[in-house]
Image 1 (cartoon, rainbow, N blue to C red):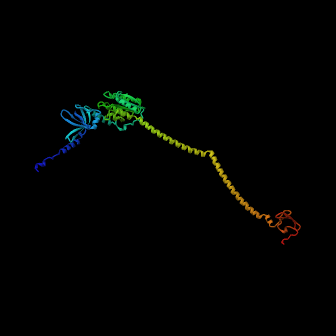
Image 2 (tube, one colour; image 1 turned 90 degrees about the horizontal axis):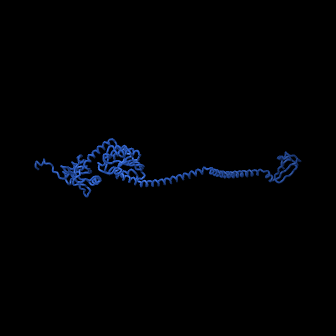
Image 3 (spheres, rainbow, N blue to C red; image 1 turned 180 degrees about the horizontal axis):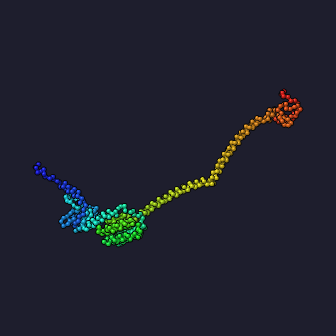
Length: 410
């Protein structure tokens, strides 16, 4: 190895060097978002949908590419032709396969709109700092608006689209139009006046709309007076200005932003078909609830009727009659038992009485002697000879005369 080889710089491959340059460009924040102004040349849209063109001025040229999604969006507003002066937004990158740097554009505007865009950003930042765009200020839209105020041109297609959409979706709503100029230097005062004129009609919400156009055409909706009027509206405001990719400052101040006037009308009201479906569902639920309620009430009425029947005087009479029958059966049973008991007692007494009956003794051959006075003779010493006595036999009686009285038998 030669001595000078120690001081020789390293040898780069083309790929390494290109990749290094790409990293340098990508790491520079200035090159990652910028506006470039120049004249368009060789503008072509390939079959892939990507656009390729060159921006040039008197001293240099800049190869540019715009990918298909951005081209499709750009076609709705402005698609340049060769020779047009434009302002392009995007970033600088390195195309390794071609070994060149190029500009990747995502937005193209006619020359002059770059200043408008910067003014847009400046005013947006100031109003945002004041809190005009805070989400906490956004109000919900009424579900079923009865009166809708519309601020737009009386002769524009936006009004026809809004009216057709409202009529198709929700014909119950009343529409109050406040016509205004929607483009030019005289537009902002008329827009503010139109908004304020609607307040006397007490709308439930307001639609502020116009059709699409360039940034310059839509600039009236970036006017500070209009933005403040939208923010100060006493009812919710829906904006539908331009197309889906267009944003104006009134969109940030409004309660809801729609991409188009038609979408604003759709957002403002429900669809009558959805309401019919919801009503049918509510009707079904109401019928089911009524059936359940009637069933519950009928059951409660039946229970109350049973309670009333149980507490009715006639039911109490029947109940007492049943109790009386029961007591009667119990009394009859008790009486039978008591009678049987007394019968047994009488039978026993009868047997005892029969055993003690003098007649029974007399039937065994004995006689009962009584004096003429009816006194029972119990001792021989109680009588004297010649005394007349009456002898009671088991059958009949005898009159006897005492011949002799002796204490000794025999």
